[in-house]
Image 1 (spheres, rainbow, N blue to C red):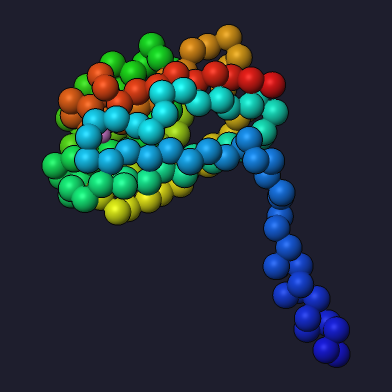
Image 2 (image 1 turned 90 degrees about the horizontal axis):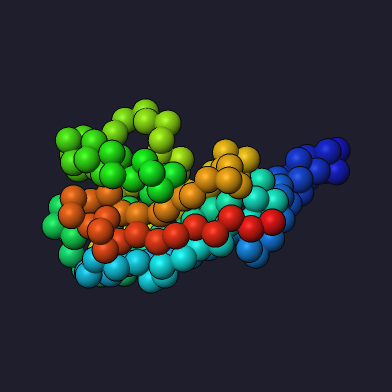
Length: 149
Ligand code: CO
């Protein structure tokens, strides 16, 4: 009887998928308008890719908020403009907009968030950019994505 009770627990404790190290990346931003990195490698073979984003500063999200957003490079200007209209309540992103491939909420100092997305949604022939959609930030807070195998 004890065996049958413990088995489901043992299964639940096993990691479902052991993600390779290169299928997860950590990135941060502080109280300035800069990400900790300007480039990011995303292996298309990952299946799922996770970005762990941290605001290491102290300022509140209303004044110096940051998010991490992934989109096709050509879509960034329109997403940024639509985000200004959407406002902080919508994390400065247009709602239900398929051009936003992945995004975290807008974070204030000391907060962190993770986002996981399917690499199958990325096209090897397209150019992708990550950026912060807080008004006025994307000119400085952006980086290029290298799609790798
Ligand atoms: Co920002």
